[in-house]
Length: 233
Image (cartoon, rainbow, N blue to C red):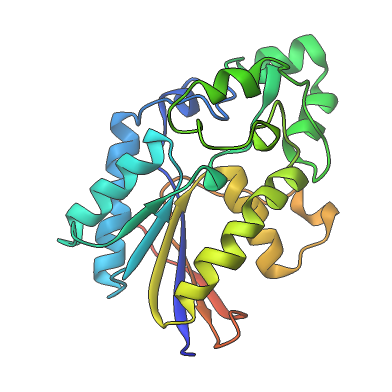
């Protein structure tokens, strides 16, 4: 088993990021700014000599398109890419599509803040979501009981961990560089796990769009060091 490098990257700005809306599992495209952020992330990885041997990402277009642009900037379009629903964004239930400021005005700023930032807060569920998702070809082979109607950050972490433990970690133990392109809350959950963060401290954790966080990992898939790449405008 060899040491490896892990790079965590949130996708570039999406249309609903720009509009300040709860996105969750809604599939929305990158903005012009988001495409530029993906390009800059690729350039930063190239400048740092961090060329991924394998990429893991979600099945949402904002992540997939970010991966395409990064690999294009690295001239590594041949790099193996694996997409999986377990890396999707946290499901925001009935909040999906709502403007965040409007939701805070209607439901109370503190209530919405806890739904968004706390480890265990669960937003109002969308009871129809699992059945609707099952009709999407991306999820037609996922057990209905695994498809969410709403998720806390804790539930998101429980969804991500089997994929991390059984797919990502075995690949990291082969050595080289692994890139995960995912979402703000997916990466909040994974970052909290990697750092052993307390539930209270997670409320302060923010993952910016398009900024690579680099982890040097030991042969037991434990964090040795972490740094963030300098992004040039």
